[in-house]
Image (tube, rainbow, N blue to C red; front, side):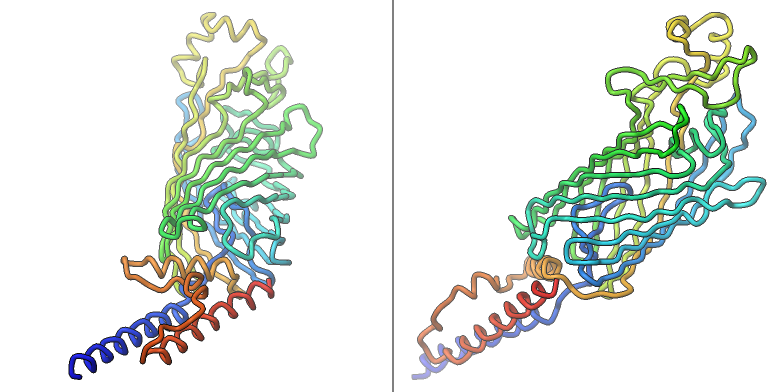
Length: 410
């Protein structure tokens, strides 16, 4: 009798512990998460939840070293940006952004740009999905009229600056997004990866106001309280099969000929970005990342050594193609970016609730109950702990109902 009573007691204690863990899993919803988190240039396929509103403040800093044959000083550049995304439906959102502080001129900061756009995804995002597809469309108006340019290659606010190539005025940017979310298939593997392919098309008809092809690839370890990520970004001219000639950037030559430069594919602006993000339960996230330039020079460069060779008749192959000015990817070698993001309006989405549950389930190797598997149980164990099993099953069903309610609201 004693042994039998002891066995029943152990069964009761085990069932009680299971219920406590289950209750903890139901209450510990995890941090508020932005379903549309990306990196620096890379954006994911998803949108924020319907009615949700997120704000992101970003600070960017770098030193742009002067070239030996220019008079521009080496000065720190500090920019401020603000971004906001508002969920219109469960699969469409409104994007608003601005660089509120751009390059200084005559010791005064200038206003940068204004961005408005939209993002849509397929309406299959109520649950975690392995493959996601999205489309992002932005209208960008660049207002900065003056900046220190690469070798003086600019006309007004159009030309080469420390970050790459900029066209003043109106631009249309389009990105197609495809990504995968590994946790939807393997619950212990919180990895996301994806690519963006698109274009930035200026409205200006000037010959030097060129379009660019955009490509971004990102890899994110999306943990419970922190993320780690890496990104490759490219802004390319139409120079995939050969160098692209750009005419008219800068004042004409002494013989009144337009300036002609040549940009090879490795000289396109391209960066590798490494960084991380810390996430708090109230939805606030702090991120820091470092874009590192990986562009490489081809042919003549803007150095005193190459100037001497150029003046003495060197680089004849370039001159034979009509090139009359040297070019190299004299962009910022590195940047440091800090980011603060927080929700203004928040309602948890079904997919992010499930992501938190899976992350909590696998946190620290602690074994927790799989809701979907437990809901398949049709009968309680036929012993004296049956009442506890019924209570456990009811809790599981309540959690499932809550998930369904959230999904219906999206």
